[in-house]
Image 1: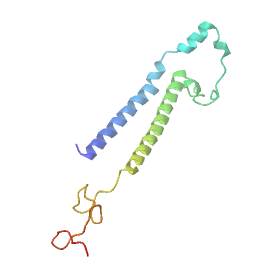
Image 2 (image 1 turned 30 degrees about the vertical axis):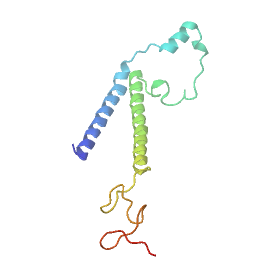
Image 3 (image 1 turned 90 degrees about the vertical axis):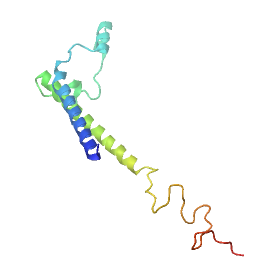
Image 4 (image 1 turned 180 degrees about the vertical axis):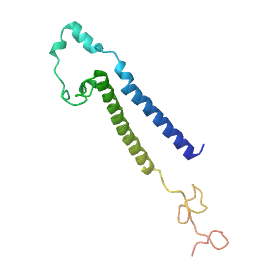
Length: 143
């Protein structure tokens, strides 16, 4: 598979995954149980549910898994889910983009050797270099 084909396959995979996430968050989430979760149920049974305080974000537009200002509870939850998936996708995409950029510029990414030298040949002036004459033999040390 060529690089273009692999990239096209990755793009299709991401788009399909994003579509599934939007459908689940926007439509299927509206059919989730409205019964309290485990922690809320235990607090209700033990009698301390009324002692709970609102959290710092209770007045935010997406508090309590719904968009405030939308009268239909199912629609408000679906819109909040779509917004949440969008935010998660953008943040995750930025993290992946940043990691790929850092990886491509990181240490160990030296440029390819030039000329006909192999990876173990240090080239002229490297360790063990005694100089050569025109025939390629080692030069005699000067006396």
